[in-house]
Length: 188
Ligand SMILES: Cc1cc2nc3c(=O)[nH]c(=O)nc-3n(C[C@H](O)[C@H](O)[C@H](O)COP(=O)(O)O)c2cc1C
Image (cartoon, rainbow, N blue to C red; front, side, top):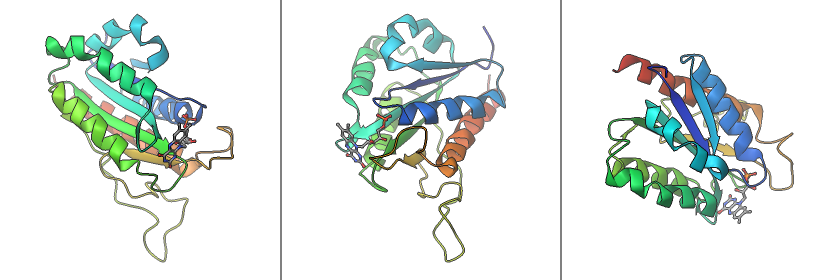
């Protein structure tokens, strides 16, 4: 076991959030030699990985203005860990993706941050200034959606995960992964 293990736990119904999860993991690998990418579909094989991680980064598409049912299933299953305060003092962060620019996806990150707080984890925000909010900005900017709580992405509803989310959102996700891993490296 590494002393800077970073876990990325995500759900993706149609592949778009999975692309982001991979970018978060790629970013984390820039500051950690042990990054574990875990789908909630397989989480029952990975509770030990989560126990070993110094940081857990949560990812879910926004479905009906909240985390997906599959991700919520993972949250509810984690109540056993919660009862033992098993993730206390780990770092946490989150990312989400939806079809609309807003799509109420802030609520998804709020849910994740409350979930982390219930576990006694310390939430790490995105740490980027908002992009694409001046006359000189563009959709190619990092953090083009202007999130602070975590990384947000937008994927047109009629386009596959080969095409969307756009590169700027993938790069923003990568920044989040690197930031969390760098924070984790700074603490014991
Ligand atoms: C059941 C369902 C509910 C959705 N609800 C929202 C929503 O509230 N806001 C939004 O902007 N997009 C919504 N979408 C669109 C998805 O967030 C979008 O297609 C996203 O890219 C899916 O990610 P995935 O491929 O990782 O599942 C919804 C899609 C589904 C299937």
